[in-house]
Image 1 (tube, rainbow, N blue to C red):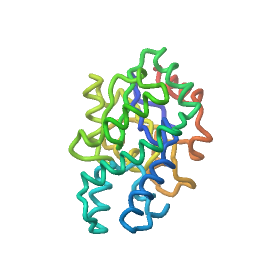
Image 2: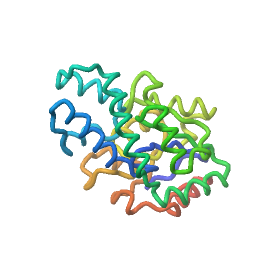
Image 3: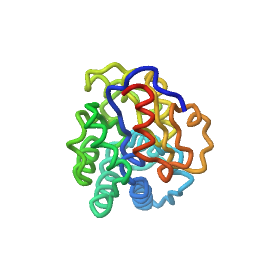
Image 4: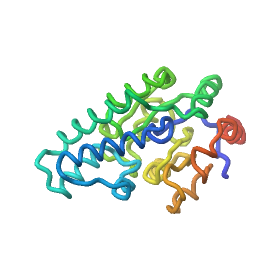
Length: 229
């Protein structure tokens, strides 16, 4: 664990697998989408895209399988399937539910930076009752390059009106952790894919090696306190 170099003024959260337990829904949406084209989409195939922007994923899928529909059409179809599933069940991680009001009490600015589409981000956050917690929502579709490039986090900092080094990123994927590093932001890593094999996670400022089952709001707040936040 490394303490932040200075006081933290805000927190940028990834959405899927970090705030909400949505990765199973995304896996099922990908599986159903690909089945429509006669392709079996496996867990192993999905692992490459955890933390990836959905728009970029559809571009790569379209090219790799030479699908008859373009990437934009694939994205629309995938989002429709995903939201059908998400409306039925999208759990908010309990420790995140406990953490968000505590951060607001401290006067910290909060943002979401996600690979999901803008309308999906807003609807999912509203569905689980935390939309009002955030001052800024940024989709990878709104920036030039998705994670692992830093564009989405730099944009989130801009919308919050804060310097990158004063913001901490909370991420579950190696793409997201790398993007935070490139943005010059301290990062808290809570990996979705276990056991952890990507070395980038071990460079995080605060690392929960057992993922969400090890994460607690108290541990996060104690870490912030170590920087005087």
